[in-house]
Image (cartoon, rainbow, N blue to C red; front, side, top):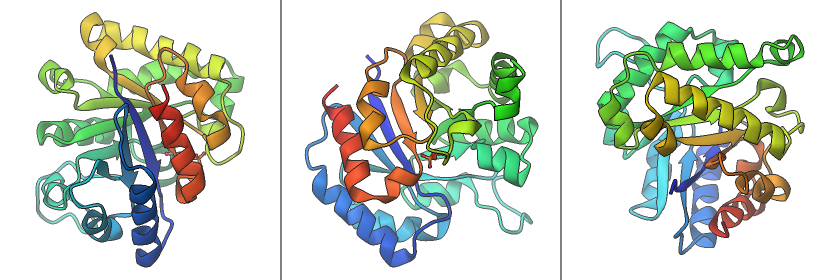
Length: 255
Ligand code: 13P
């Protein structure tokens, strides 16, 4: 039984006051969570303020990125230890905006995932094809390569402890309003799980949660979550709107 993970990736949005207000509202509207875990992922500079707002509640705190070195002359970067100090438990690694806008490579992402998971953070490793890759029939090949490169040398122990989550976010569905259909998402998630069975092991592949992301909203959350291999949602735009995000959380709670 894989516990659903609903995450709100706030990206580079919201002021400090807006971040605190949103976190407070989500906390207020989701009192007794039993079926799903809820994760808020604010911008780095607001993590501390959001941490104070949610306190020791059922809400979990995540970061949008992390660097792989422990400390030193890496201007602008943030270490796993710094995140842990703030109460962060989860970190996104290889979000498509980091891959395609910032230009992060598979080799860097692998180092980040190894660093994060060895420090007991849960690494949410994001994969997904671009529109061009999809149209040229290369989606499966691209996703397989991202999995092989990103998960190289990851210890089975950290996976068994639940420190690896995969997020499938087709780039063409992010912020476009064009959600993958539940059937298409399920098909890709099943493909990802079958590849995880080969790359890691069949037993561990059954334990790894695979989130879907890309234009998720209250209106389509339940049908996505009804699919057997969709173990949660990684939400962008709709996670900034209380009513939308609370609706998505409630859809997971009903599962
Ligand atoms: P949207 O939900 O805005 O499409 O963003 C998805 C995403 O990138 C979450 O990480």
